[in-house]
Image (cartoon, rainbow over all chains, first blue to last red; front, side):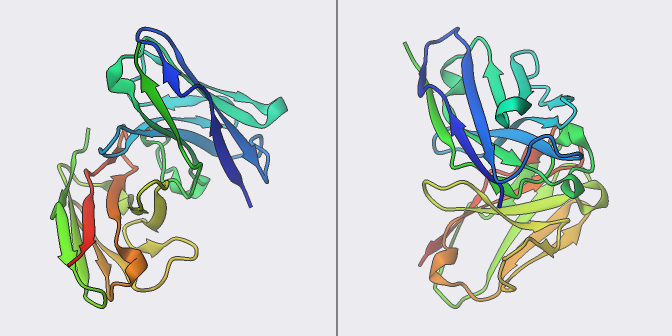
Length: 127
Length: 108
């Protein structure tokens, strides 16, 4: 049973970089044809897809965030990570890591449908 | 970008009643690549439906999805106490993937 767990600072200063890690247990992130993704949810608001990474390391990012986002794999630690640069208060949100099974990724640029989620981690951007 | 509009914003019903939630897309969603999620306070979303009408693993059969093109529906045939939550639709065919703003199903 694959499980995901986000970790990282809960408070980030404006203009700095938000860095989160998702640790995968119960399965390897290197398995062929697996994707892994990040989604966020501002307080009291809806969900926004940030980006998805394939087991090869290829990334697919939301154009609205593409210039500020980096997603990468760390296969040795069975983790994948999110870096969001130049944050503002508008980036305050609960950040989720999640897995879309390959069969639910008909178009990687759209992220996929996510069947396994981490519990989420709240990140506040404030000085 | 495909904009998904969910209606109503809030649905007030009693346990045992039928819930019908709507999701309308600004453009056709190819091959019905539309999903529905349930989210309870303080929890991550849970995948209910994918491909517009296929139930995810472990989802009770009181949940059903239908629709194609630009109009999709999630139906809960008989509301159980644990079904009161917020529901989101998502299209995952056109970049970027997008979510609706959510429908809250609350106890009347």
